[in-house]
Image (cartoon, rainbow, N blue to C red; front, side, top):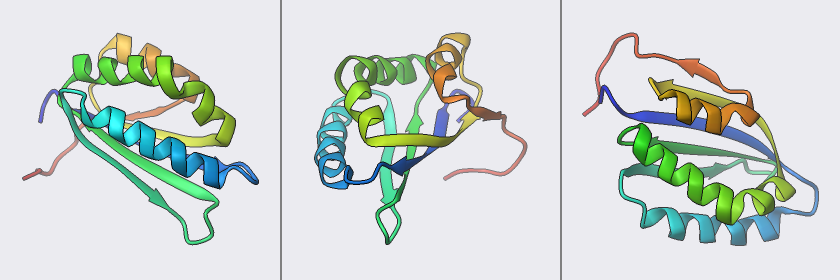
Length: 118
């Protein structure tokens, strides 16, 4: 767990964009399923369809960079065309390259403080 990187990304769905965003989400999930080192990739939506939270967890910074590269190449334009990021909270100790890749989202970084995971 010491090397894992995870985050919770919160986005607001733009008016009229939900149907297309659902299609994009399915494509992103399918693509991410094939990425080695991706441990969790879960999407949650509010009842009114106006907000989505995406929880992502990676085995380490190199695995995170693989995902960020795929996102940038394949999905960033469509994703940002459909939603407005409202908050990104990153957990763990990502390396500087990951921090650089996430900088546009203005993340808050939290380092481990206590507890456990099974």
